[in-house]
Amino acid sequence: MMTRPGVAVLMPHPRTGGQFVDTIEASLAWDHRQKLKLVYRVNGAMTRLQVPAPRPPLRAEGLWQHTCFEAFIKASASPNYYELNFSPSGEWAAYAFRSYRDGGPIGDDSLDPAISINIEEDRLVLNAVIDLSRLPAIRSAARLLIGLSAVIEASDGSLSYWALNHPADKPDFHHPDSFALELALPGESA
Image (tube, rainbow, N blue to C red):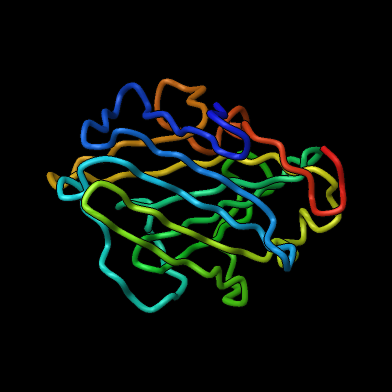
């Protein structure tokens, strides 16, 4: 759901709560180098959430088991898609899929998204910039379909799952109907 141009609201999955978060907004745009810039804004009681401590910006596994922000990206006419995970710690992960959940980690450290974070008493803002030209399945696409999501860990260890769309009974960010935004590549029209 778009609340204003370029800003989408992530909704909690009905089965997972999220009582310490008021809203999660996400936006995406192309920067001047034609890299994709993602911004996630979490508004709520930050003292009631677990946010991973800063670490070196390296590729890591299992980020989705704690507070983490995710983007699922595919060319509009292809079953292939990518999952990108961005942790407030600065760590990241990337996965390539041939079709629904058929794939695995990308072993290319050169993806190296630039992640920055700002945390205040009632807000967390995570910025991530990634060069999508390094992802072969979308290099020649004119339009992308994108799913934006977040996993939020409360101080008691419980997880809530947030996305643009929840098409299944259980949280499933990989579901094809979760790719709810359309974005034209730079120089193309949507």
